[in-house]
Amino acid sequence: MPFGLVNAHATFQTMMNEILREFLDQGVVVYIDDILIYSQTLEEHIIPVRKVLSSAKTDPASDPSALRPDASDASPASHASCAS
Image (tube, rainbow, N blue to C red; front, side, top):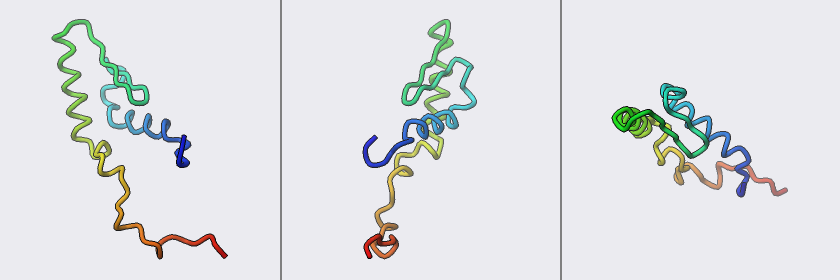
């Protein structure tokens, strides 16, 4: 992975498991960035799809702005210099 993101896949998998924990093994399987929802009929399928989508939408961890660093927090003085 570029930019030192060595454990990005494992971290994302853990986050998805936490967000969708209540649905796992009840018709929902998560693998990295894929969410598989399975059921016997279309009528049975609609309910877990709505639950998963609403859970992902309302979970604070799934907010994309939480993943971006705040530029105002990064100042040159706040970082240690490696130069001697």
